[in-house]
Image (cartoon, rainbow, N blue to C red; front, side, top):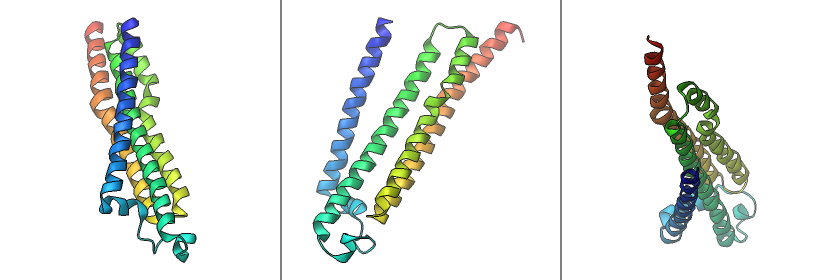
Length: 179
């Protein structure tokens, strides 16, 4: 049990370091690349409200760009964290000393961890609709990317992690039953 707690602590520290590095890298790209920054600030002509009227165009656009950037970064960091969480849960179940039936039942209960990337993607899509009032170009980027990342991560976890584990357990159970 102590080894499991140590693994979880190391996982949390590594996940935090990864999250901080990801946010720093995205902020660095935003500050140093005009092309990357334009993804989040939009073209100005499509924006609504004060930005479209020209009043405070530069500062308003930059503020909305930063907001969009941090929303995009948060969704991507959450996607990575739930990906690592899903991998960790599946590996704990696979390496446990439980019987085959218990492992299969625990894998069935672990479906929520495989669906979390989809929920985070849905969160990113809904949050991007809020941003849409101010910056339509960026909100589409966030909505499409968060949904796409959620689908890809969920499918990846199910096909490369869950399926092989279940396949192995079903095969072992059939061998034990003499089929």
